[in-house]
Amino acid sequence: MGLAPDELELFLRGLGEPRYRARQVMAWLHRGAALADMSDLPLPLRQHLAQQARAGSLQLEVEARARDGASKLALRTADGHLVESVVIPHPRRTTVCVSSQIGCAYRCRFCATGQQGLTRDLSAGEIVEQVVRAQQGVHPARVSNVVFMGMGEPLANYYAVVRAVRLLNHPWGLHIGARHIAISTCGLPDQIRRLAGEGLQLALAVSLHAATDEVRSQLVPVNRSHPIAQVMSAARDYGDRTGRKVAFQYVVVPGLNDTPGQGRRLAELLKGLPAMVNLIPQNPINGFGRPDARAASNFARLLRERGVEVAIRKSRGAEVLGACGQLRGRAGRQNDVGRDTARPTQGSC
Ligand code: SAH
Image (cartoon, rainbow, N blue to C red; front, side, top):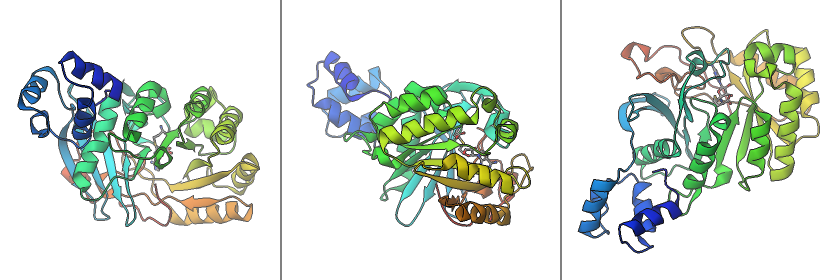
């Protein structure tokens, strides 16, 4: 699942096959077919493949569907860890929120994944396979959007993430437009700049969450090494080089980062930058915190008055602990279901 088309070609040539087989095999793989079911391949090749190769490596462990239509997939890796993805259907699009790591090293205060530390990076194949599994589940609809907003920090697993993006984007595979793929980062300036140079039209989302270093360092500890000025400068470069509007994510923590002072400062930071702010009502983790729709809409008003483009993220799947920040790599337990239901407003992933 993680092989690039030219690598697949090389592998198949090693089995004495013509070049064009790579295209057939990749198309099947990215539709989630088992090697034995690739029916337009000659039988001896299918048998050969079954001995030499493996189509993907994740086992579906749990699929938990919330009443709002979002579902969380818990997939077991070959080495026994759980990877979570969330499938979010809309009338006109279907978004899959994928994980890029098992756990996360960045320990943002309100994020469940961050509390457990980093176990390991996911491979490009494991990232692609999450989307392939989601696509199988939503058929005949098509996965139209992918957001790297699940477990992990995508830019800390740079090579695998960019490779996965190219595979998802490839016409032989799921052919998802790069413009419909978003990378969300806690703010790693060097990697943001490197991403700008990839020649991909990816959407960038920066998890800002506060407008002063004092408050941001409390919520996002990596701010102590990469303060706001550095992150904003890299985000500006990204916007300049790609011509794309940058999204800033902002989890509203009432009384801390939604004060008039934070609003004023945020508007200043964004001045002259093609940008939008996604306010995310804080989802509860481990029973703490709660989404406060009123705080989010008050802060949205404050920002709009200062000319900032704002949307309030509609967090879906809270019932199955699939909302923003709730993924933690454990299979959904029965008694988790039905608790902590978010009251969404508007905007979306
Ligand atoms: N590491 C990346 C992507 C993962 S999280 C990043 O930091 O952007 C995707 C988004 O969900 C981030 O903006 C993150 O801050 C947000 N998030 C984390 N915990 C949350 C919570 N409890 N409620 C709402 N959003 C949360």
